[in-house]
Image (tube, rainbow, N blue to C red; front, side, top):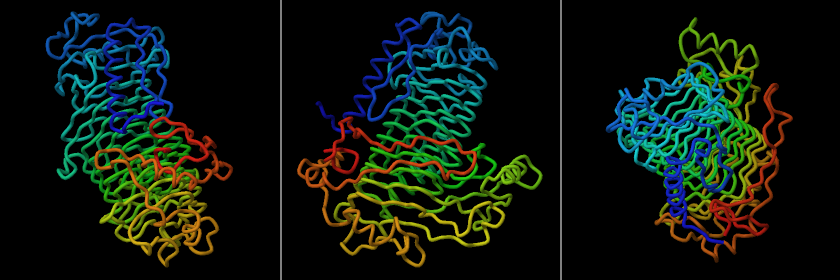
Length: 536
């Protein structure tokens, strides 16, 4: 079996995408479905849709032409978009907009890509005709659109979200580059923002440059983040919150972010959530085979999550401003003023059993959302000499009994370590007596907790007892050396399945399976595989 260096694998994916995209330009519509390599997990399958091609040439096209061929190309993407029927489901053909080499000005794209309803057989595909990286678009806003695929493009914005998709259904962002501004500039809050949407897939993109979060999912159910490189953000590199559910986060590289790599849950205005996912911040999120490096905060976190798996990830040079992993409260408030639509929606959600409030957050007056069934298995965390977590290895919030939960429908005491299991991990961080962070007066995972406590943590994980060696992390190779992989191969533990019997009433059950059969490079995992993203 051929093995690839991690950065070679990322480059190979982009090269193959470029070759495939070039072939699509001359292929007949029925054979125009773009395909992606399966990097570590099953990508979204486009299939073989029926497509009518519309050509756009931003340098020499004309909106007075037919757009039927490269020679008859339109000049603007806006003109091409207007040729797709609005407000009705496509039934005879989908549309493929092929953009030739060049850059499009903000006036050349729609103000909103709005209310186009593709289907699996008749989708809407916008792609570069001359290969990955040959077309640059300004920021795009997409609303109420179905089966839209953006492939092989570059998006650039210095003022706000570069890609924003609201109330989207079956949205694919594959093989794109998304660039904002350096996180220190403060110019861009979130770079890729998806909200109140379903079946969203981010695959093999390079996304960077945000003062807050590079990727922000709010109330997104079903989908995946696969094999992306997400970096240079002041807050989390990426998160999924606000009742996001049933998402796979696999094979990504998260790096050079402030608060951390990726978190399931965080904090949300109650009015922005979607029924029936009105209780937890995140449900059924699996986080596997990722590499997190050079983030100041935690590698991963869970802030108000139910059924969250963090398994077979590699973390390197993390936690220098606080801790390695965190399991703390999600935050819930209600924005706006009494009588407006948002506040009314908060009251409606609360009456239907949602967890929240009609109060505005004043810094303390928010609802704490608990965690339940969080499994942290078979990860590899390595801080080299001179690098260590600032205060503790694991941050687990203590139970909450305060008045902010009054009238919120959230049980008190509110726990953030309910069935938290930390097992089979190899952690090398700081001196042998470095504080775990568990069981203190202001922490969870106390001695009486049967699934998470200080003694269990030391017994079920290798904590500063075996130092892993990576091949060449300074050059981007985070695989274990053969000798280190062999030494660690028996340290992993079997991952339990999810159960959904105690999910909030009305919540659809997600998958129960938590197997991770392949590693980040695609190699099969066996009974003697090592922890971390690479099986060894």
